[in-house]
Length: 292
Ligand code: NAP
Image (cartoon, rainbow, N blue to C red; front, top):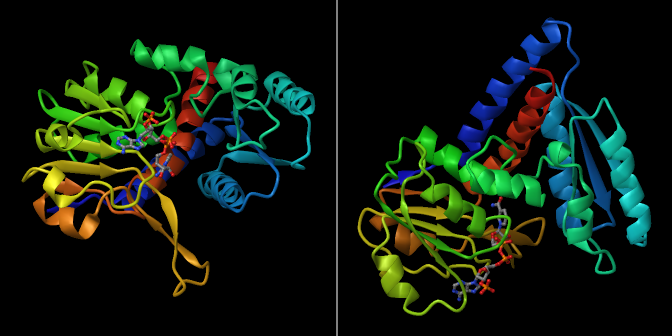
């Protein structure tokens, strides 16, 4: 069994981008610029956004953090998005999800100009991704394909079972795995809560991508010998031994499943850091589309 080290791989990606940014700046061009909009005081969102801003600083991106109170109206948030859309020296921005209940997330995502949508959630970018055209790809599936590429995992002709069909992970991951690319060409089964015989389907998988949000859901008796298991799940579970009071658990019963795998991602330290790196890669795509 080989453990896939998402933390080290993400570090490597950051170093590669930092090198590219150094060259860009040395050539007299301005550094890429990312903005993040944070609405409210959700603990998880604050942590994620701070991490994104700190990544930018580390690799030489310019970054701007825009904080808004949880009671901001939808119209006011749309006005923020509009302003960022117009800002010439800004290459891309994200509005951290989830948003307060009174705001329609879809409306906000759709208002972000596609060429600045570094989350890759806008329908235009999702469509381009689905058609295999150059674009910003949702950061988590992008991170998964980077792990597959960099670990030299064979996907061509393999059976890939994706569990979960969210617009940000399962659905785009299933599309990418089936495309005619170096990290695709798999035969894909996309499964969800209505899927019957999930255990049998998983047992025939060479690659399992689990994105459900149910800790330990994928059990040892669902995985065949030698399978590759990518665990996207990150559920906070109570842990009194931790200062934070919680720890992250994946969707895979790691201790029981890992001895059967050829490759497996841990939680934490697998897909999570790659998602962070994916955003930075997308900002480079947005910047290059504009300048290079
Ligand atoms: P989501 O929107 O919460 O949807 C969960 C999906 O799982 C749905 O498609 C649901 O099916 C499916 N599902 C639920 N119960 C199931 C069951 N018993 N059998 C088969 N499928 C089942 O998913 P998400 O936003 O992709 O998040 C999934 C997990 O990934 C969460 O733990 C989240 O925190 C984590 N995540 C991690 C990262 C990272 O960077 N590591 C990034 C994003 C998300 P239906 O569609 O039928 O309801």
